[in-house]
Image (cartoon, rainbow, N blue to C red; front, side, top):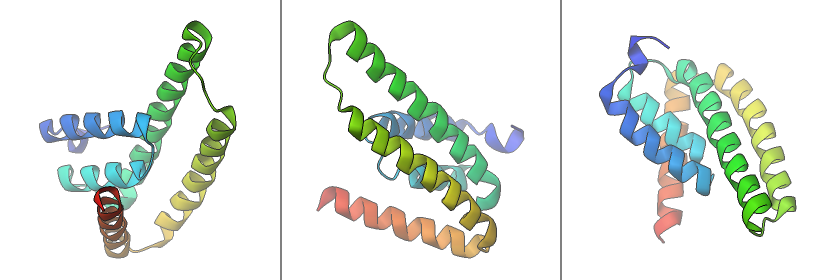
Length: 125
């Protein structure tokens, strides 16, 4: 990925966000964009594909864990919810990546900050 993604300050926050994302998924992309924006020297447009791939890997891993829990441990899984999240994630990734390409870097960064703050307030209020 290049030297810009090899920051020691990147691993712990991205790992924590990945654990959160695998369990909750809400605002997962905003967290990744914020972490990548703070810990790397890349523009928001450059880190967006990294964010998308990270979300893909995290969500695929979480889906596999839930599938194993369902098959081997008879854990209840609401498959309609799984399908809704998967569909929403695909649509959001597609639309979001196209919007991110068109927005100036400063507008994209400001949008991410605003969405992150709203998500943070909603989480604790």
